[in-house]
Amino acid sequence: SDNDGIPDLVEENGDVTRDTDGDGVIDSLDLDSDNDGILDIVEAGGIDKDKNGRVDSATDSDHDGLANVVDRLPNHTDVPTTFTDALTMTILPVFDTDGDKMKDFQDVDSDNDGISDLVEGGTDVQLDGDNDGMIDGDVNRDGIADVISTDNGGIQATIPDTDNDGLPNYRDLDSENDKIKDVIEGGSEDNDNNGEVDTAGMLVDGRDLPDSNADGIPDYLEFYIATVADKKEGLLGQPISVNVLENDFMVNLNVVSIQIKGTDAPNEPLIVKGEGVWMIGENGEITFTPEEGFVYDPTPIYYIVEDDQGNKTVPMEVDVYYGLKTRDDKVVSNLKEPVTIDILHDDNGDLNNSSVQLVLPQSFKDRYPFVKLSTDKKSVVVLGEGIWNVDINGMVTFTPENGFDGQPTSTAYIVFNQEGKQSEMAMIIIEKPVVAGVVIMAETPEPICEDYSSNSVPSLNKVGLLLLVLINGLMGLFMTRKENAKDSLK
Image (tube, rainbow, N blue to C red):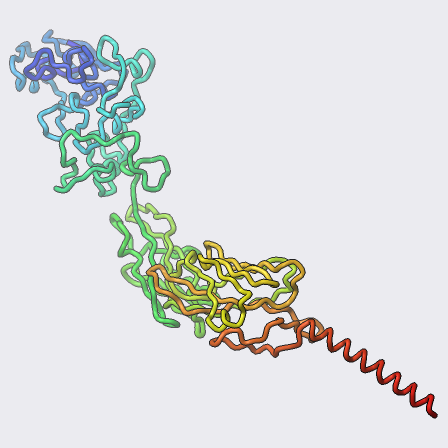
């Protein structure tokens, strides 16, 4: 009756009043019976070049009501009386993709992957506010939603087939052919691994589909090669190997395509001057071999890999490190402005930079009561000198008091690794620069910590220096007067 190429008996399926989408237009007169934005003739497997929902040519040679372009026997006048006979009358496949006894043109999720045909068919997801797989709002007299009717040119020219396999996305359980089923990438469960939702009829919200890389393309439409950053601990000064592919999800992986960023071709080694060499081995293994004498953690590198179609991953980090170890830090400054020190740059381990705490050795606390450590162990105030602070990135800054230009009293720190293991204490030292062969030393004696000794020699403080000058002056005056008295006696 609606000339969509699907016999009325098939559209009625035993119920002459069947109205799948409840829009008031019965299916035998409805050109979009499930109101998903995909015309019935298309969902049934037909061709509709002018996108009006009807067969392109209405010529009917045998006058049986079925146009020649869809009539299996265009010169046969027998009229079907059963559903089965009606199906054999048309050349249209009239698909039931998921085999649920509901033809695709009457099914809002033809492949039962949890993503509605409306979404997979390319209809604007915002037109389905209640997420029932049907366009909201009114329809015209032939059942097509007003917002996409042929009158306003809303019918789309093509139905998406992302992987170009001849199967439109709404009938394809793996739309981009990345070997990850749409049901999984759409966010549903598939415990029996058949590519369909475990709960029939369940639809995910098409307006909020998973998008792992936040590029605006849902995962089910994007060929996905998932690589994950790698970390591994080794023995100090020894080579460290890590299989970078073990934790990756790859499809048809091309192992020999692994390339370290910064090299010119796959499988080339990367030489980092002053640190060592990174080499690619078999089966996705990358090894760092340190230079002789290099005992610090190397700078992380990045690798890329391809599948057999040449699809490349984004660069992914490889970070190897040695056991938890801290080292004393010493800088030279004239303290004309605050001094910031990267105390962790030469330390080893999978460090939690935000965990740095400033500490005071017991001997330090006993001898210097004018030093105050904050309760959060993030700052130390030294009266008459200045303030030490550590930020969330593990950077330590000493800010001197106005007028202070001596050598600050040293402080110390500890840090924890990602597993919560605590390091040994390390010192933070600021020294004054050497000027004309003289080093201005701290006003307080060294050492300040039982487990730390300074190579510096203690000197007189400013008050002592002033007293020395006064005494020398008085002695000079006394000697002058004594000489004058001798002269007067003569």
